[in-house]
Amino acid sequence: AVPKPPTNLAMTNVDCGKVSAEHTPIVRSLTALFTACEGAAGANPAKKKEVEDSSKRLAGLLWKLNMADVSASVCAKLLQLCAALDAGDVAGAVNMQVALTTSDWDEGSSWLTALKRLLKMRQTLG
Image 1: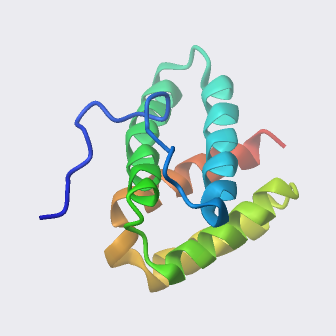
Image 2: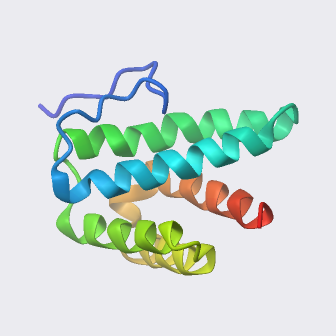
């Protein structure tokens, strides 16, 4: 049976120690995205709740990456998305998120909504 992620999973405690070197940029980039949005949410209760929910969902993706349980096609798109993010091209990252939603919803449904929310929040930060 495939192991299930811990119930208390969050961006602050997810184990990424076994993520392959090839996929480390995904972890780094999504963690930076999360941290930026968490800081921006600040004291706004609605935004804070959104960010906390996104923390669990995105940590689920990183947990799966750590277990090498993410398909090659999804990893390739995530690497493109993160490269765009790292270059400050949030619109390009959003385009990749839309592509993932279109082609890989079955695999990514648990974390794609969180990614979309965080990218939308990141766009408002300029």
